[in-house]
Image (cartoon, rainbow, N blue to C red; front, side, top):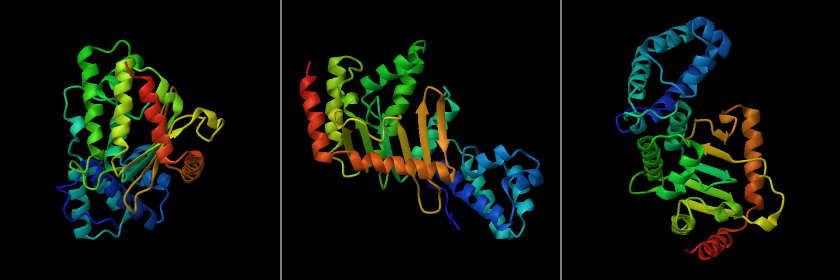
Length: 294
């Protein structure tokens, strides 16, 4: 059982994930499949799944329906679950703005903010948690050429604020982050030569942090397990299932089925096994930075 005795210091997403774990436990202990539970509570199985995975907050009325359907819940446990639902319905910092983020981006920020570790392979770009402001601005502008200036700056600022989860002065413990990228990422001129040189220097600085590991897949490595595209694997506190995040032209996908997790974890293990040591990777970044000096 996940214990939330005092939710006040926890983020809404953290509480939602803990509540989702509790609700999934109650459903399985009641011997109910998702389909059976959705019929009992009279809303869709898709909605029920999203509540269990903390992709949406649960209302008081829907929570009471679930508790009644599963049975065997004491008054004290019912009150605790209702408190968790109330805390989970608070807004995250990215939800307290006049400009709304795309729903799937908000969902990802919630996962990223509550993860204990993140292993990300990026084939084309520096990961958002390590981007400089100028690099981020150029990337966002290229993907959204019609974006208004104030919207662009909002997204850039959001990306910068995300990076606080790597800072031990902002979060304890900070996120354990493994960033793996192709060497081509280091040599792609994003935002111009000066901006790219600053970005590479940012990577060199980031590599000094004890919770950040940078790995670069060199061009002469040839074929490797990451060539199918970018992949992120998020791990959470004990009791919460890991999540695989895949971003591409077809949209953003969240994978949590056992077979998908096994496949993607195996893929990430192969990528890490083929990657050079951190010191060798840092040498590649330093060499690219020297070449990129304006």
